[in-house]
Length: 154
Image (cartoon, rainbow, N blue to C red; front, side):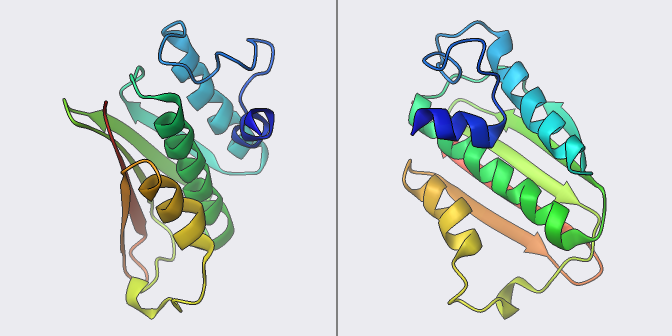
C-alpha cells in the first residue's frame, strides 16, 4: 500500500520506500517529494508554483494524507479549471500545517455540487478527516478556486 501511495504521489523510489515521508528523513526529502508532485503534474500539462515552507514535521499518516489530498486538488485543477497553472502555498504554525491550492480558472459554485458526488468528499475531505484535518473550498464562477487543506501538528 505504501508503494502505491508513493507511486501515486510521484515520490522517488530510489531513496527507499521506508523513509520517503518520515519526519526523521533528511531535510530535503519533503522538498524532493513536493518537486516530484510538481514534475508529475508538469508532465500532464499543469505548471505548479510552490511557495512557503520547505520542511515540515508531521507524522507519516498526516503527511501522506496531506500529500494525497494535495495531489487530488491539483488533479481537479488540471481536469476542471480550464487553466494550465496553479499555485500551492505551504504554511505552518505551532499547531497546524496548511496547504493552499489556488487557480485562476473557471471556478464553480460550491453549494451547487451534488452531495451524492463523492470524489472531493472521499479523496480530499475524507483523507484529511481521518488524521484530524479539514478542507475548505472557496470558489465562484469565473473567479477561480482556492482549496485550503489543514492537518494538525503532533
